[in-house]
Image 1 (cartoon, rainbow, N blue to C red):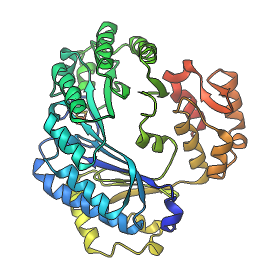
Image 2 (cartoon, rainbow, N blue to C red):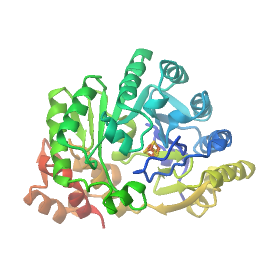
Image 3 (cartoon, helix red, strand yellow):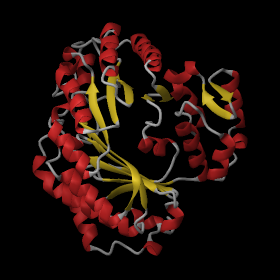
Image 4 (cartoon, rainbow, N blue to C red):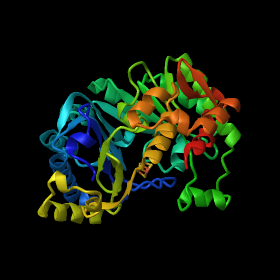
Length: 406
Ligand code: SF4
């Protein structure tokens, strides 16, 4: 059994992820579950989403929601009023904590003073803007539909409208990007005074046009040493400007760490709705179908069937939910492994004793060899009773994480 609502969602609440599978144009480096040219599905998608939200609210007995994250895709590309309608449906079917963090990912090209004012009225209180770069040549190569001036204007518009919590995403390690571009971009970005900054190294995903262009020699292969220099420069520069480096790829001003992502890293429960969204509830992880059309049909079928009273919500029944594509049981060992490699992403580290108590597995015993080896190799260190990555390990953290993956 998955469990009863109170067993799987603690009284402290849960998080909700909402996947928006629409983009105005598909960027050539992106392999996310998102599509261009399916705008005719806007209305049925919002209907399916509000249906799915209502059904999960019923199944889980309207638990408390601490964070909502609209990711994508491009949530800011949805028609006016859609975000408000979706938040209202969450409000009607869950209990949104009055201090909940409600984030929407936004493309600079969609942001105006009016759109920000509307989003604030609709309940959004955190904007995550996909700036990616402030160099126009790089933005063109990335296929972004904004330029640097629009990126800067969008941040200013969001602040003027009243957003107090703005996060900016940047990419580094790009073909043709050099350290001078990077320094200029960071300087201009910090001057906008965002509360949060996420830095992502480009991954050349197979099957994407950017991967092909690099393979064909149309673009140079990014130099990993230059990417490392960019990361180290950002570490110093952002610290100088008062940002705390709290997770491998994330920096924030005090009290502005992403609460939604913290819930992932701390392995807290969350439900993901929308095509291709993942959920982690009780001892199960499950995911919805990728195809927006199949998802829309699935939500309609689920709403017509009995959404099931929770006592019957056994594991065999998870994948009988028409929106769900698959599931897996999280064994105690898997949970221990996840707690280690997710928790170690947080640079303060893990309190092993507390974590062991929370998950009911003695991590010090289970990972005695791995922890000792990592300490002796200088990959991990103990600090104030916490086990954490050493500073030199941030860029090779995956080598540490694999030790804790069976
Ligand atoms: S806007 Fe974001 S989600 Fe959409 S295609 Fe570009 S990178 Fe992917």
